[in-house]
Image 1 (tube, rainbow, N blue to C red):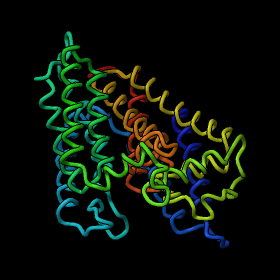
Image 2 (image 1 turned 60 degrees about the vertical axis):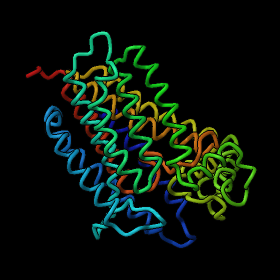
Image 3 (image 1 turned 45 degrees about the vertical axis):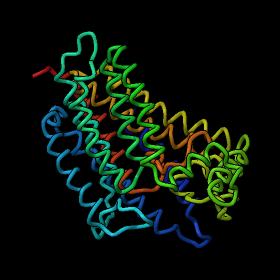
Image 4 (image 1 turned 120 degrees about the vertical axis):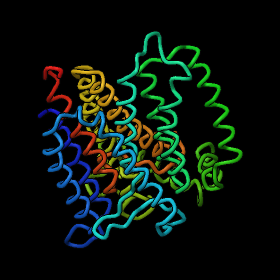
Length: 358
């Protein structure tokens, strides 16, 4: 799939240029962070070759094996690894720090696609039909919440909702889920959210109320995005990032740096490339040869799409800061490799769209 591959390389090229600028320390060479991301990105591109060489239908059964493996990794991360900044999310492998919650999102898409591909939908799924897939989602959801990682846990819930809507629900089921969702939101707010998580939501509603503490990130991000104006300040000329006003400028707020340096025109170009890649993914889902392939492709696109939308709305102050990266663009090895696997599987599905069903 040359279209998907070229779009992937184009987005990755812009991501590397942005990372070079956001982490540059004024010396003659790029930062170690840049080289680490470059090596992981090259490995991810190379990984696509073996990924497209097998029939994706094998994941219909292998997915549950991967699901069990990911659950073991999540249990290990939640209870047995050293805490970093009050969280237990990473497993140190020596040469690489694995964040198992990232591949957990991909594996959940695979097992949900496998489960729903075996179901007769008819007039739509009822509440009882959602018990098994709900449990499949709830187990990793709880393990990730324990770490704690609210943003990634919510992504699992969003993926579950996206896929059940794609499969088809009865209207009564949608109404019942709406009531359950509102009830769950109230329970989470009162009993399950930690204080810093509540502060993030309150800051989102009124960032100016605490501009030097909780509201600082959002306000500096909005300043960076707005100061780019039409055509930006130029590559490596952004002041918010290089003068260290903007926090997390190579991870959560990477696109703020891009918007400041390349302006509205550069932002539109990047987003055009990015979302055309996702539209191409939807086209792959529509042209898949079987139900499992269509569900898998749709879930993979939703995994990238929702993370991108949440991150972009977050940096513009339209959503609370929840620590969700912009796939392919934000720094982070586990997120990058997971997204590369998603793209490789999409290419796999498209390659086999004319294959005779066995």
